[in-house]
Image: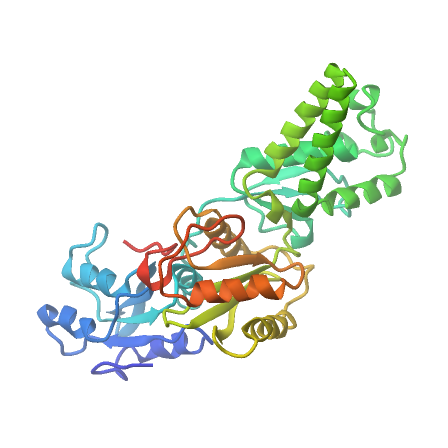
Length: 417
């Protein structure tokens, strides 16, 4: 931690709050006694052009009060613009008493750090997620188990939320696919009256066994709902392959009508998966191992998101002994600290998942890698990810799940001016 003049002054309360976090560590920029015209030069000597977060604070009623917590791809330029009144948004030059700046290795890390610090310093502020995501809610234990698309999922159990989906249309397509594939109820209001309800037309069409009127036991129906919940993105690729083989077989047998029907079903399945279909799962199982730049050549930083929590695990030296083994050991230690997966999905969960999903979908040239945390990655894959993040050379455009941030050389996902 680096302190400027007056580092123990009126910003000490904020410093204590921010420093109580295990990460990130703040650089204190206290402007006590420094003329406004000299503040930019004061901070220029203490900050580098790196991704990070900035906490601006003012004095109100004699107490330091946070004004804004912001992530930026270049904390030095960002603070200079704000203090100089050149930023496109708010000019803080007349009210800011000081700032805390936390340098990060990548824009992705900066966004996660901003979220962690904002929860401590400004818990009443509206959280800024990286876009609004949609989810499919399907709970086998509810009174009327049926697919519902939700965009405000914070009152639901994480184990009953399937996603994430970039658009509501993708979630709706996935829900429709589950309905058709597992013969789920499309009329939850009718199902709520089981076993004495009057079945809808889906029973007559043979698309639903009708647990609503007792034609199927609710126990049997709940078991089938459980199978639908477990149908995650990892199974979609296999199903699409099955469709391809069935379409070719039908065409070879001159069954063109059957081939056309199978093609429609395959298209519906692909639409349901959306652009990131392999990542679709329930939110209690959604896990990510991120290998990111540190801003220091030769080193990579390991993050995980699991059980609703995002945290850094530590730094790994690419040239060290068994860097992949060290990284996985860090990951396993962090995984052992996860909370009960039956928790209710929170706003913090939603923000973290949105930031991760935005990183996965970015088309920028990047040096970070994101891997699914459903099993231990191969040693070769993890070592390549570490070398990629530790390199200061030019980054190649990544494909698949290898999507992240450009670190110190680019803005990445940080959302400053």
